[in-house]
Length: 163
Image 1 (cartoon, rainbow, N blue to C red):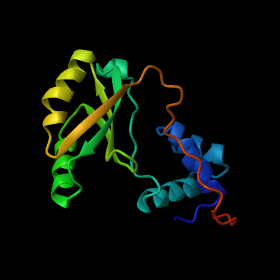
Image 2 (cartoon, rainbow, N blue to C red):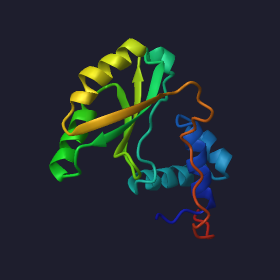
Image 3 (cartoon, rainbow, N blue to C red):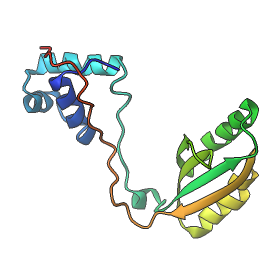
């Protein structure tokens, strides 16, 4: 785990909600002058604490307002089967996210499509025909109760402060 102090954590929390915030404003919010703040952001980027910057789009704008969580079970767990399934999933624009999980399923997909007809087409003509897929189980998202990509860094970071 990276060694994050309180200022690093404030920088990360602020950038998670406002990734396009000008450096001068970010520095003011975290209690630094712009140059040390910029050095910290660069270090956080270079060490992988900040993986990338992205814009979160409204599903309505993308034309993909129907969303489902799809549990996928594979025929077997051989390296070949898993790799073939993963490659097929990566090629599908309907799949916003795919997670290998524990439990009675093998993968959990977050699928975003225009409507139920598009979901049916994806499920019947793509997903169920993918290599190694034994079965699926789908749940449609009715409402997002919480959809926050931000996280709070754990309190395990050292108490020292870098300037």
